[in-house]
Length: 129
Image (cartoon, rainbow, N blue to C red; front, side, top):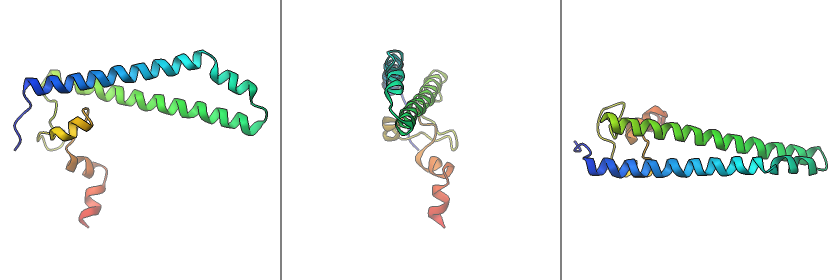
């Protein structure tokens, strides 16, 4: 069994989470700023035919999907920061064991260890058949 995370390790992960949060908010602000500049409207108004208009609409839809993904990641980061404050950060929500540091380095808002995440996604059961 791995030892619980100490204060220094938790502070490291807190800083990683906060840095990622800052980057996501910066990306969202930049995207919104571009939209406010009217790039989408300009592209739509200069589209010459229906296929071009459809492409511009698709680009707008893609931007919205990307923003929604960022919103989900921001929520996951907030929840991870809350787990740090509560003293449950880095513990798998399924088995209760410590999530390995390498996994948290890659995905600091992870809530499950690799095995339980694979099981959650249905990959582990298929592999054992």
